[in-house]
Length: 312
Ligand SMILES: [Zn+2]
Image: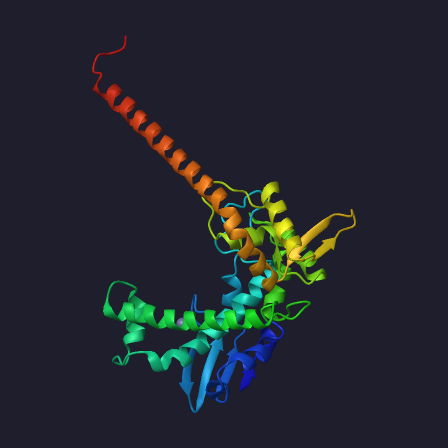
């Protein structure tokens, strides 16, 4: 296995990838990280070249695709947010690398297709056979990457992430983020990240809640909801997870590493099910009320249209 440009990647990634890659691939694997993008939106690619499996990674593009920190007040849209910014960066780089290796590993399971089918499918993205083939191939690689990440997670509660600063290009990207002020709460995210790192955590309480349900119906502000936060803290205490950072004012900020978060989420799901059902019912009610209001407004508008008599 050979690595080029590994200084651009998070610390510890090459060692972990070497451990988890299948032996027959690792033997002939060359990973090259480039300081610039090659093609818009391409995070990485893989090919067979001169006796090597060559995985090319584009850290600048991967960084640009990281989930943004949430705006300070929001917190209803949790779709992409996995954990603190460092943890997000780590899992994104790990996933991309494993996805590319997954293409090699699952390549043997792909059906034979004429050369150029993949390229044709990529450029079209429609209902054609070539596009379906591309989606199938990508799913296989994604699936392998996720299985491998599961395996890593079962063995190492930190999902392979070394403690301390992430390093590489994602490190520079995160530091620069603190100077960006538009719309999103970079400073808050950085502070949270710092506190988490000081106690070896990777996810905050609201991350655990959003992990329990990636999308919450209606408006459930996870970061502000006290009962929900208390629930998480109680379940964590029941599992004897007491990872927290104490700030200068003496407040305890609770954090979890990946393995702890998964354990808490498993206990939370059944407890949260009734609350979620209630929130869903309320969201449905709101939608019905809004629809009725809209219909009434339309009825009013059309009634005034019909009224030909001048008012005065
Ligand atoms: Zn792919």
